[in-house]
Amino acid sequence: MTSWLKSLTALLFVSILAACGGSDDDAPPPGTIATEATGRGFTALVAAADKAGLVPALSSSTSSLTVFAPTDAAFNSLATTLGFANAGAMVTALDGPTLAKILQYHVLPTRKTAADLVAGGATQPTLYTFEGAATTLALDATAGVKITDEVLTQATVVTADVPASNGVIHAIDKVLVPPGVLNVVQMAQLNPTFSVLVEGVVAANLATTLSGAGPFTVFAPTNAAFTAALAELNLTKAQLLASPSLGGILTYHVLAGNVRAADVVALPKPASVTTLQGTAFTVGTTLQITDARARTANLAATDVIASNGVIHVIDRVILPAP
Image 1 (tube, rainbow, N blue to C red):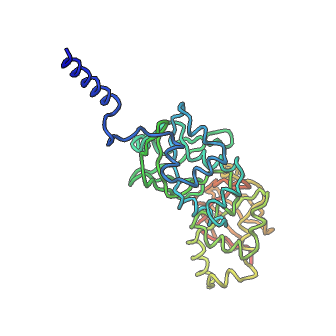
Image 2 (cartoon, one colour; image 1 turned 30 degrees about the horizontal axis):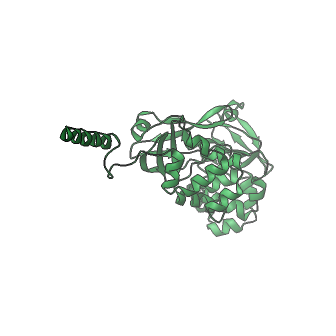
Image 3 (cartoon, one colour; image 1 turned 90 degrees about the vertical axis):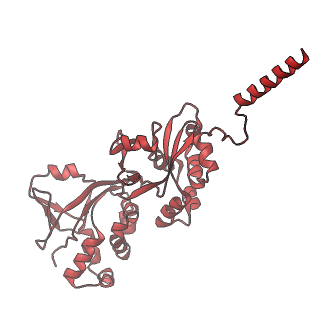
């Protein structure tokens, strides 16, 4: 009897160990998104989520979310580009509602693994609502997963499928910039394609004006457009930035008001459009822009929406009359 009882006791003990996992080598179950983000070193993201009041949602057992989590290096890059000392200084300076908008743009309302993202199509809705609708992210899965944001730059998923009890985390190498949060100058600063334009805005002392309430519509030439213009005008970049004509050239690219692509399409053509510089350019039936020197520029991208207006990308620097 004693031997049977000992055998039964041993069997029950083994069964209990098996039910509990039984081995110190077994991985513990994942924590919530908030817990996993904290434990895996997403320090800036967690600090921003805390200030934005989003930690409860990221900790809720009823949530089932997908979070694109920028690394600390990504947050520091955003911060320094915008003129902050580091990510901590940026989180301190921005208010909670602004941080909430930025972070909600990084969250999908359902749990999606990398495979689900690939299968989910070219656009994915986020938790950030703007102008009465959910904003979307553009995804490209041809080589890994790349995400295009409102400022037309790409983030890459560097670590996918980090499990959480209430969703999944995908680490990304860039902070995604949503529509309607940063001003037109900041939006241009965050896209390297506009670095010459930004240099010009600063040199012409227009940054403060264009960071104001506005609204403004900016037709933004790319760096390639400026390179072509410098060759055409036989100027170096330094000469252009020092030119007394720079302010007039740049304000010739700006309209008062928030003029979206649909508004441009709706204009009777050809349309004469008056700029902040004081003179006009013409928009034709194909939306090609003709400047005061009969030179033409094409729209390369439209409706990059800022907090104080909108940016349309053009492929040529347009010039007022000499």
